[in-house]
Length: 412
Image 1 (cartoon, one colour):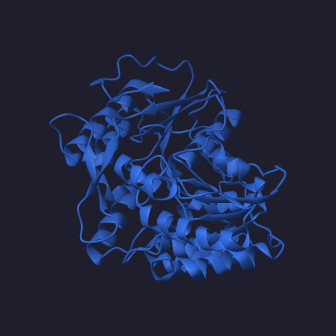
Image 2 (cartoon, rainbow, N blue to C red; image 1 turned 120 degrees about the vertical axis):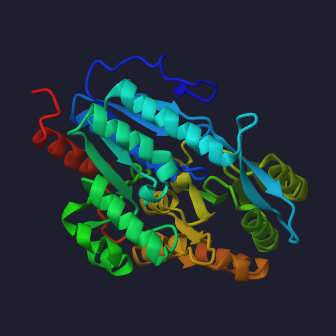
């Protein structure tokens, strides 16, 4: 991995010996965008003679392998700081990790580095995965301008999970449509093609771009072949950035649940983006309780979910696809804010597919209720999964390669 957190230019990055393709995300919190980009990058280099560069400001991220033709480039990360608030658990603010620079100034620094990468690598195409990425003009505008200058025929794709992260006002939607019309050649939608009608109904502003949209399927990990072990419960919270209250709820519910199931253990994976102070507080409150183990991060956790008798989780895209592939029982506590029910929408969709047993609103849930649901869920066999197109990475790569070939941007 190339680390640009201390570097003001990209001159140290070797120029590629084959066509370059860039997959970039401006995501500050979760790892879902990067995880998808890495899977699409892996499928892309298996299908075409390119080097794929995955670029993100996250402090670290994991890949499924170490293909030399998939290069990871880390931009200077944002830090997360707990903010005092009149509530049990504090809220979290985004701050810069560069001395003397604000978070907005760090975003502009990212923009300069991303544009410099485009000038250095001269990619034949890009996928910008933090949709709707065009609303983050400070991050992407310079890179798109540089791309059009150094590679006028380059392919520009937007990556979209099929559910926008929040609602947008009329002015934002007008600006988004104008920018999509000007820049996006294709929109890669990482959902089952059978869901196209649902996507357009939920997001009618995308209707004018129907001809540019490609529904490629869900980007999923390999199906878990791990042997399920009785008595093991996993609680996992994605990046963990805002999960402290939910983690506390699950730990309190487990204490009640364990009275009836004393041999069951709970492994809590908080996520690497939970702040140090909140992690320490959780360990102090619950780490000494019998049967509970609290850790920040477990490499390859998504591929190991099938080992657990029950998984309690938040409702991010990657977590839900991992639950689908694992075949295990699950209770999902989706993140929810006013105007943002993205995880709730996804969780309810995966419940209809058999991947989720219960979808619970954490803010209205008592520990005793969650403990009872854990008991009931374990008493039943895992639900049968309904068919789902899980070839999103491979089919996205196929769409990209076809279009690059049509533009004659790949070697013969």
